[in-house]
Length: 129
Image (tube, rainbow, N blue to C red; front, side):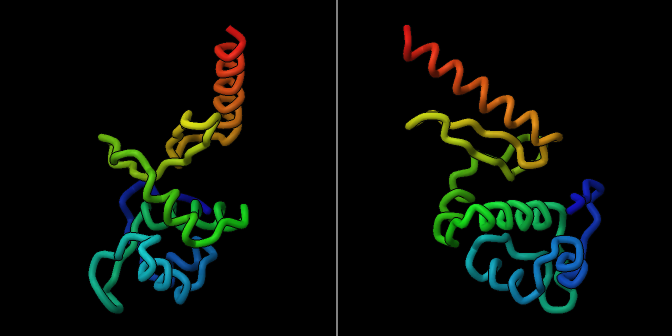
């Protein structure tokens, strides 16, 4: 799913087409508080890059077989909005109480895997000391 970074707004049908999530489910996610409400109402409602990225993240979490309550909790735990306007983050718990946060729009998932691996190695080294 391509993330629009140019501020383009989408109708619910365009958002559904780009995200692969049916309009009915998008409305449900908004009602459940998993997605922020669109700008405007009815046929003039407009969705943006944040909605597209949040739907991608929800799909990823659903693929991990997380329920909606768990997804809602994870989305609510996101760190405060960054100065560049990005408010969607992925979180990994490296050890109890040790979290690694990575911007959801960070390039190349492989970088995330490397960061997690480095974090675990650092934790193991500190535990051995």
